[in-house]
Amino acid sequence: MTPTLVRNLRDADSSALAEAGTRARDWAEIQERMLAPLYEAVYDRLEVGAATRMLSLGCGSGLAMLVAAARGAQVTGVDSDRERLALARERLLPNEGTEGAEGAPAHRARLHDTGLPPAAGADGAPYDLITVFEPIGCAAGDTEGLVPALRAAVPLAVRGATVVLTGWGPPERCATAPVLRVAARLTESARPPRPGGWRPTLRDDLEDVAARAGLKPDGSGRVSCPFGYADPDSAVRGLLSTGLFDAAVRATDRSQVEKEVAEALHPYLRPDGTVWMPNVFRYLICTT
Picture 1 (cartoon, rainbow, N blue to C red):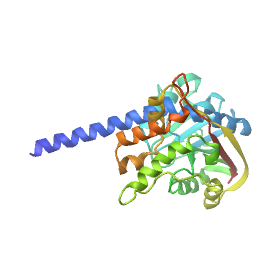
Picture 2: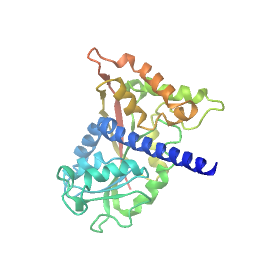
Picture 3: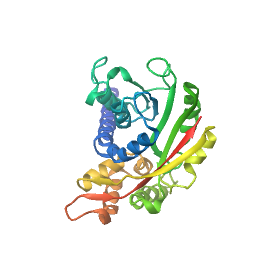
């Protein structure tokens, strides 16, 4: 019985690892690019370039870092999701110490999977820009770990450094909101209801985080980030990779969530089979 038990546990571990890897790939190859207009708008407004030393909290699979590095910025990323971080490493540091992907110099990028980097920039100089490009304000408790992370990161930056927080726009401006309500309904249907489900974005979510982290708001903006997918299957995979449906999956099962998300996508299915959902995202610029 013991060998069988050990084998089954190993099979379960392998399955979980494979699922985590698939989900990270879905994020990197399908979903992450939907936020590219947000990255570009922020970088344009802040004039990110060769003089910029950026720390990216929750850097994911690294697309925002890659865009900044292409502008000449020195970038450092931190993320607890090791599968996503491995993909970021492939993009930014495919061969340690040599030229990075798509022209991003490897020596101008650093990645960390636990805590914060031991020093500021790669050259030891403090950061002047801290970014949080993982949108907040769409899931209960999604800022709990962010505030302490910001408080820990601020001492690594210069006095008066810029901090950028991002979040979903008003639900009435986001076509994806009705699809995300599937997560809320399935989560609330569990007995007892599961924590961490989707919730509507509140007007002052970003300002609340800034206040709790001791940051001073200094401007904001809104950016159109439409979600476009080649087909409903890609849309389901991309949306589930965000983590916003995790509580719903725990409350029911993945196949049920996939089925109901696919049904909720019908209003956004175009005659050519693609899926198109206009959305608006918001960013808040703060100073330390």
